[in-house]
Length: 361
Image (cartoon, rainbow, N blue to C red; front, top):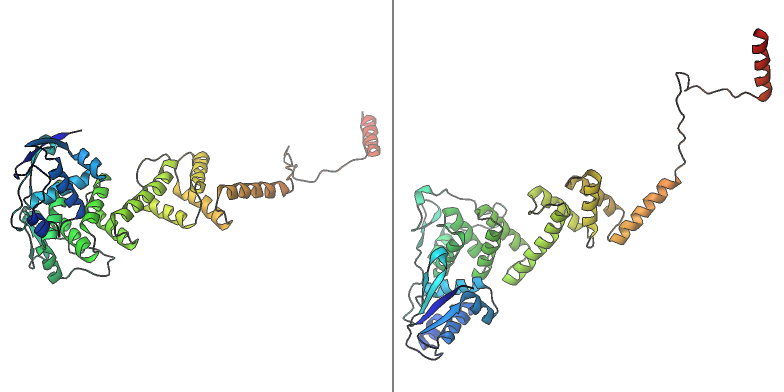
């Protein structure tokens, strides 16, 4: 657990909350951010106190990333001063006295109609690639006027600053456009946007197209809260990754593989049926084949199979049908004339033939 030094520069020795904080800062702040700030005040029992991000997260029963987001928010509001050491590890956090509320963001995002893009003063705009189509399948797009208004919002500037830290590089034009689309058109809350970026980055995906696709999928599925997003991603991981692991693959499915799995899930199979098809595929051809498994599952679907018990019944029915077929007697070929019908001789005929052979001798 990494601990940082917490310094008191607010001239308080009790958990007193300034009226200026309550009147001007608290109404527009996320409830979690307010709790983290008040917890910091509570922890200041002297001039210096030991604290940790994980400790605050445990006290408030929140994620460590929520604590870090809170720090970043209050830092931009000039209520905290955060120092970081090697590997961006927090070493010191100083609480300062509230002052008159001013513009919170140190990232200036402005709209430039001539480029039809959003620019940031921390970017090298000459190296940016225009990204004009935010969502090919979206019904609505952001007009230039709305885009300009979005770029001027303090909350959007703050969101862009947090996302930039997640991405670990200055936001490019396409990054900011996708972010604005989520914020303005999809109406994602800041917390949901942060959760989405955390999820994508945790999967090693920082590409704006991938992030956009996830956002559109969430919007289509009605995912509009962090709780719903967590449930949605958990289902993805459990359903999709179970299939991949059944094939001996420890990686997310490729788009073509995902299409197969999506079809299988719509069949309404109970737990274990899809895995059974994957296992039979591996036994039959000794390699992961979604096409082969799809043939098995389509057949089961046509037979009305829903559970593993139904699979057993289908297997028994197939075995019974095979046993009812008449046995095919194969005739052994012994020569060129084996295909002709052989004549059957009686014992009298055999005796007559024997006498004829003896007489010839």
